[in-house]
Length: 412
Image (cartoon, rainbow, N blue to C red; front, side):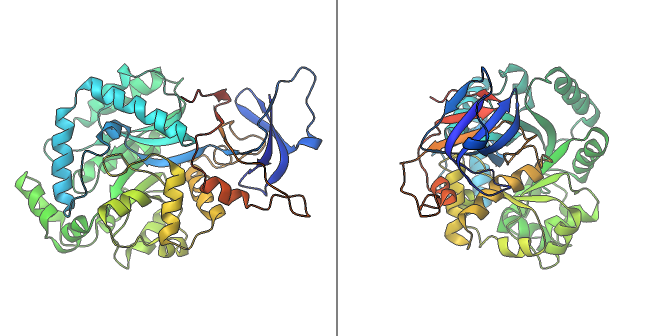
């Protein structure tokens, strides 16, 4: 199959004008100027015309369970109050509600050009009831033991059994100790052990709110008191940051994706850099909660891999990664190519898929998206006068093409 487009953004290499991408089964085998890649005998050619073809977007942090929560929770002054509200809402939903929510989430992701998502699954019992996911999905099973201890051995056996029977699901599986205030160090150790033994990734929320920061750094605040009332042993609080608490126990490594990391002590930057973990920033969720400015510049200066995600529709109004890119540009001096690289190259690195996802190159997976644009006049060099990276970031319409593993995904 040969795909032709006015503009191709391979991301890991310069743009191509009047370009072509050859796909065989699920793999990109060639990319270049259309003049240099003529169709082979009998090859199907798809001419996308006035469009920009690039790798499918990677949403590095999402909760598809809560898609149907959109607009249900007004922004709260207190993160603790937001937690109470979402927990009450969770209890009001049925199994069928959550299955519908996941399906709706996949549709919204596809309409925004996402081909890969890192999804936190709060209800692992839903998985056997789901159809084969339409997008490449890493399912991170959420672990919480703030109220009751988890039967780790049984849970792990069940998870591995499910994973082994669903090798046709694109993506992968992993564990997600929810956060240091809801998951014990034992659960983090379990995730770390699985990473070492089975090659599974892990993800977790750390330092999301100022209340979590107060809880661990100073042993006080509304989150500290609320969890104490539920019976949490808060003896691990007041001795340092939430991140340092976990790093000191050796449970954060380079196969971990840390969501948020909004509130850090000065010593935390070196700690996270030393672990090799990736960080995922969720710009619109950040704005929704009114958090302090995200320390993007400092994290990047320490060499931390920072990618982007949407979080859930319980704290966002969209699952469109272009909207997240525009949001991060509102608060940080980032160019259009830079924010696309955060979504694509950095997202692929976080998932351990460098060279496979987030770029178009021989050997990469055929996860592609194309957005139509108005035919533009050209400069004397033959390239469009409109910056092609900016045109993608500023686009609002659904894709004209979405490929996952070489298969075209229908777009409603």
